[in-house]
Image 1 (spheres, rainbow, N blue to C red):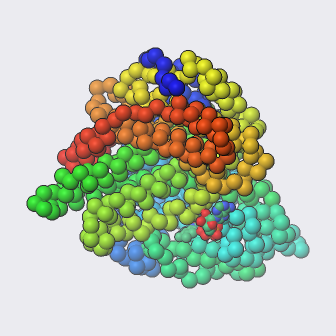
Image 2: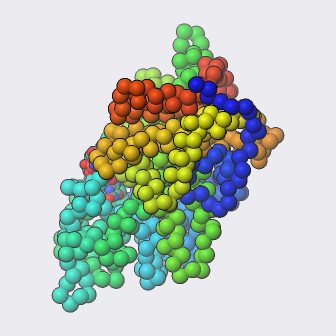
Image 3: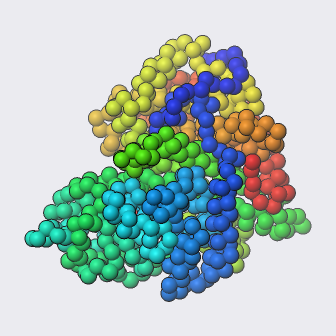
Length: 606
Ligand SMILES: Cc1cc2nc3c(=O)[nH]c(=O)nc-3n(C[C@H](O)[C@H](O)[C@H](O)COP(=O)(O)OP(=O)(O)OC[C@H]3O[C@@H](n4cnc5c(N)ncnc54)[C@H](O)[C@@H]3O)c2cc1C
């Protein structure tokens, strides 16, 4: 069957407004503006520089003491970060913060990632510790706590997990009973693995009122009945504090109920959305550190009379690491831009402004989960390949990769395990489709028409990324087609078909990745036509050429599990017809990329 039509120029028609969450699955590449790293303002870059200098000058020199958990050191560093304004980025100006956008917040998270023990503590305070108040606090609660959290006078933590309920967070057993005089709740229970528990002054604690209504509470450390367990002995992020939070008849004033009674799950899940997004970006920052270390080492280490950077096996590693980081970066900043654009369209004077901001976060649930999974798995891949590049020395603590390798592992577990996040991706899509929130059904109909008539299929675009644009548009159709077959056959019990959902999630992740990297490079060439985009083009070529084949392989695997005989053959032929093979000299490209990385001595892109 034919795979392509005549060629057309690259520019897709621009669509109005902000895209719905998940719209990347159906909208053509280039139909929306996307935010890319080259567009940072001098103000955003100044915050990033402050974060980087602080971590380089004040955190890294104390690394050993941090990892030994020297008493009071991490809280002191957090307070110092507060003096520099690094704790107030996400706090609105009216609450004593800077009220900066997500792109700035993300850039700072990325730069703070040189020391994971510190960045996890910092992220727990500024993200999951502070944001519940930002989004759900009453005026009185905000005035009482946010200015102090903004400066570091108070440090925060988030207590959701329990010994018996981790992924199943709403299965919590901690209880809150209203006192007879109605003035306070009495909390009892144990929270598990709470970051910053050793020193935090304020905890967002989730408990069930009367054992039923899942609700968030602001609990001060000084409250009688609040204590913490011993520090956990961990594989990585050893310098961060992780303890149980123990509540024994802790009396919490009714004024400290956060949000609505019985609606704690909304707070828990929306806050995790932002946490995931920031975690994915931080992971990309750590991956860049690992790659830079590997590049420097490969350049200097000689074996068999040559620098190891001249060996094809090492060049392949360097190119693959750079490519994944570049793709993660494209997805992360695109998502930051989506959230910022949507937030900017809101009226800050509206009485329910914060609630509307929460709706924006909720809108991009699919993208946040994708960034968490892709960013954290990118870091694991890069930490592992970077360690391998250093050989035996990578395994020793003489080089930072050993620490990054250990520290990276937690990222796939907290803020929702990657399995849970993978499940969220197709589940959210299905919910949106069922509610008509995304015109997916119209897209499915279009795909059916394209299957029937070759002339209706996406045209093969012109330009340096023409084949990538076409491959990506076709892959969106493969996903839609597969989703439709799954929905027709399994809608009632798709939730129970986790192995199907995992494959679907990976297909959707690859679509966002292909779409973002292609759109990013096109945007870069549009706004900076004179800049050299050779390396960025190379990375987009390499990634898309393998990702579209992966999407087809997953779709075929799903179909094989559902269909048989002639029907299966017919459907597999359709997947093949929608999966162009991009003929690329990947070996030449990777060699070129690696040589460029080694010449630069570090990983940088436009
Ligand atoms: C260092 C560290 C810091 C942490 N910091 C915090 C914090 O500050 N605040 C906080 O509240 N929590 C925190 N956590 C807890 C963390 O969020 C949980 O560990 C995580 O959510 C997983 O829960 P669990 O460990 O109970 O694993 P489980 O939920 O028991 O999961 C075990 C395995 O089963 C899988 N699984 C579970 N349910 C499903 C399902 N429905 N379908 C498919 N697979 C499933 C999981 O993916 C995982 O692979 C932290 C944990 C650690 C280790």
